[in-house]
Amino acid sequence: MKQWISNSAAETEKIAREFASALRPGDVIAYRGGLGAGKTAFTRGLAHGLGWTGEVTSPTFALVHEYPSPVPLYHFDMYRIHTLDDLYMTGFFDYLDGDGILAIEWSENIEGALPGESITVTLQPDGDERRIITAEGGGRF
Image 1 (cartoon, rainbow, N blue to C red):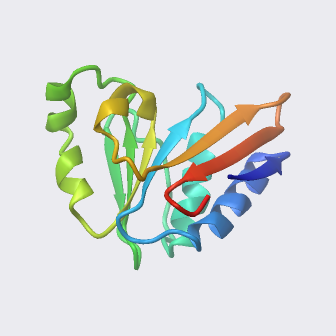
Image 2: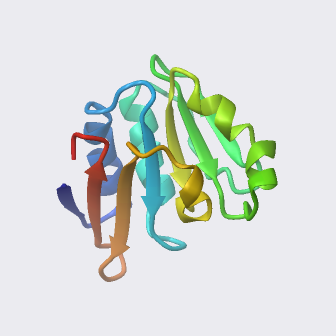
């Protein structure tokens, strides 16, 4: 397990940029944290750490955003996914077989479909801006 303290969204992004260097194609990151916990800020740093130079936004209505960097990043929002049929419609299982990294917001909604070697990143608010960020799993954390 690895833990960081972030005091701002910019620090969360910096932590995620450094975290990206430990990732490999095929990794699945399962986020834990409520609304406003910093999941999208973490993903923004992750995408930039993987080489993406464009904008990163929450895929709330699109369900998945693709960031074609040297190691592609696929950013899912599973907030509205409640059944296995819903999950199949996102194309999630096809992405698992790809060569990119999956970052999944609201991963608790698809808990049973996550690979056993997923990396769990928990973002826990501790005040207005401060976040406790914990990574565990994947055989490296």
